[in-house]
Amino acid sequence: MVGPRELTAEIADEYNFQGNSTHFSLILPYTAKDTAVELITSDSVRTRVDLLLLDPINNWVLSDLYLSCTFPFIRTTCNPNGTMTAMAVKVESVPNLSPSRLTLKDQSCKPVFSDDRSAYFSFSVDSCGTTRTFFDHYMLYENEIGLYYNNKGVAYISPVDPEYRQTVSCYYVVNETRTVAFSSKPRRYEPTAEIGSGQLMAQMRLAQDSSYNLFYQAEDYPVVKYLRQPLYFEVELIESTDPNLELIVEKCWATLYDDRTSLPLWDIIVDGCENPDDSYVTIFHPVVSNTRVLVPAHIKHFSIKMFTFTKEEAVLKDEIYVHCDAVICDSNGQLDGLCRGQCVQLTRQIYSRPQEIKGVGRGQRGTDSTQQRQISTGPIVLTSDRTSE
Image 1 (cartoon, rainbow, N blue to C red):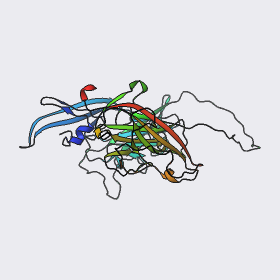
Image 2: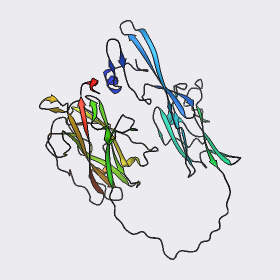
Image 3: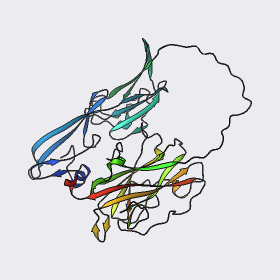
Image 4: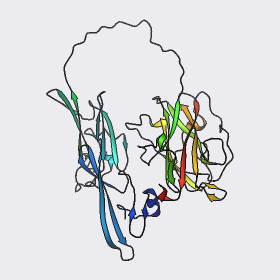
């Protein structure tokens, strides 16, 4: 057992399980669903995974152990523009907590994002019941994340369970007060800006795991990956903060060479999503706003399992390169074709056999609302020998 779940073949692949008759090892991120979280201090958490060795015939516990690690964890961020962000995590001491039910003191202030492990809040210091206190040369803004009961008797958690309360606070230095004189006069003309032009850039990166926090750098290539191990890709529109733009991954494919037009090739994404074969799975992952991701529409995350690329009826074990065509859509233009949105289904089937080169364009797109970018990454070495790493 790994945490509350039985160790299946799928979980073993997910956690890179290796073992023999005397030893085993696995690797899992501290945010994995099978870990338990304990708050240590205001800026650190301890994550623990419990392991049980069972006799399946007699249902006996032969051995049990746990592993724990402490990680730095930024729970509150104080911004100079008078806004605060706070992260609340589900802890083991409140097992029935649903993070989406958490609110600030003003119960109308709910998380801007939540999942089954955490809730993320963003609010200004003059809202959501935030209090302000002056002392010495500081201003203290304080609020509280909690699970509250309303007056109608509807409770989101059993009264016998422990309370969940997390104080969030920000200190601002008040050094001195200055008086500034200014005057104004009516404008003769409305301000205008000259029309200019620029180049929008896109990039594709290979993430080290499903958290999309760490990425392989140029000096890390070629990257070695095992067959059946997922590859996590991020395609991003860079150097733009325009919320009216959205990046759509139109198509992706793998080749044996860095030439994107070389043969053979294996389709990974076709027409933004769909592909009728059922050999293996491409998964699009949701992208949420955080300190790194300012505009989620500028980024797409997807993963593929590398175990069904075949060449001449044999499973491919070779270097591959991955190429994508991305479309940048402007919501102020005519939204047709791909610009109506990226594939929103979590699972889509794709080809595993070599295909002929497809044309750059599939379908008609309005030229006033899209721009196309071509991006590639690699090489990625596929191997079935775990000892080669």
